[in-house]
Amino acid sequence: MVPIARISADPIRLAEHVAAIDDARMGAETSFVGRVRDHDPDARGAVTALEYTAHPDAEPALRAIAERAAAAHGAVVAVSHRIGRLDVGEPAVVIAVAAPHRAEAFAACRDVIEDIKRDLPVWKRQLEADGTAEWKGLGG
Image: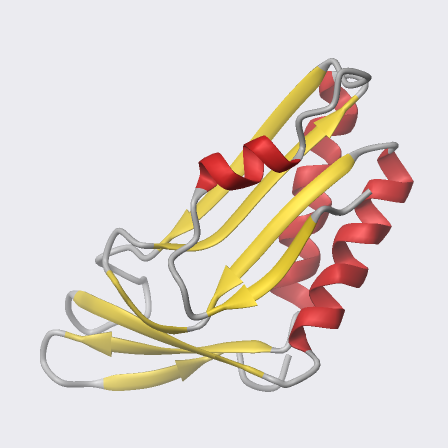
């Protein structure tokens, strides 16, 4: 079950995702929040923001990723990815998972984030303090 699979320019909130996976049949919940950080190993200096852009098919692709993980692990998955300009500290990705047991909850959450990083058609432009801007994630 996937109550939320959203690409949005609006801020994303963990609490909304946790509420969406509330299910009395499930014994474990886990979550992941990916935030914009102030550094990157490839950056020349401090990172000040990220600008995310998405292919028009990104939301159906995100839903497919979540549905695969939910089916594989008997889980409930809620996931959102933000687009637009995000400042340091803002959540870019939020995932919440409920599953019968902790192993399945952790596995489903990991599957979702790894599939997002590998397959979701969303790209980011990294903005640095010195004015440098570099696209990341283009070409797979």
